[in-house]
Length: 225
Length: 282
Image (cartoon, rainbow over all chains, first blue to last red):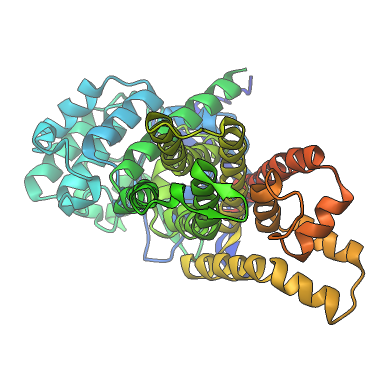
């Protein structure tokens, strides 16, 4: 059983990732703790989404990356049981809402009621939309459903890639309240362009540029700068 | 042990969601109606009452059904399947679905098996329907032929699914995957009897090489086996089949005709899964 040192839950050492010779993550090293609530900021192409995908075990990479003591590429099935993820853009999944809920319920062993609770709070009436294919929902509805799949589970890591992009102001507020009240010992990585929006939620800011970390600090220090 | 459990659970979940999804697609219903309708049309037009070179009754219907299957099934399987993995990759569906604790292997084979069941079941039901209707209308039902054809159809579908999933795993885009599938199909069709006969007669290529080429082509193997029980004089079979059946026994060839496509499907499926799980998924 891999050991987790102190409360470091993700350990990244000299991580590099390139696509067709274009370096997207450049020898990045950082330790992320289980009580960190991180704002991952940076311009488009800074490498935020690539980093998230490396953590999810979706990319090959050079260097070392350990998630909960596991190699995410080799043991992705094990680590993904403890990771909740919301993508930047909801994909055009052809399953109906009912099928998608059933899939999430069975594969994550989480009662569907947990998803219903979150989505109800966010203002999405799932029961009215059970028979609809997911891709036919509006952008906001899709996002709310995916958020409810991530937050309805009890996980150790939450990876949220621009989670509020398609949400109305009210739903945003509710999402942030849920995030604030989520289990304290959960590493949360919020990728966002709008620092002001998530300032109250986070205790650490990591800024990326051209595949490197150019700032890693607590929020107060960042705001001062 | 835990990882195996996760793989099995992933495979079953992906397979069942894929089946639900495909059951709603127009492709699936068009395909099912095409085969069901074809059998109905053959009965309605009295094909069971006609006789051509020894084929009569239900045997005649089944042989025609298999010839049509040989034309439609491979290209249907290739075109509808090659978009599977690469399509999910391009649309970012895969990024999301694989953010759940789903194993790569479970995802790949779950899709494979779902597609197999939904391609095989309609043709099997059409063939079974023909046999049952024939029995109901007092025709002699050639059950040995029915069993052979059911197994052959399963083997051919499995073979082309394996090839399609492999193309889908390695192709960079949907367009490239579809083009590759189409070229492959054209190549296999081109290397049926006619070109083989040309190689044999005009280019004076050694008969053993022609047999080898015929035996490699799953379409040729399928075509020869469809007629193998019938044609002792080998009059309707064409050059490659003639040489093949002149060289090996019928029983051995039937075994080969079922085992070879399945092995090919498994091999390409395994390779496809290997590339799928070792490459970047997006």
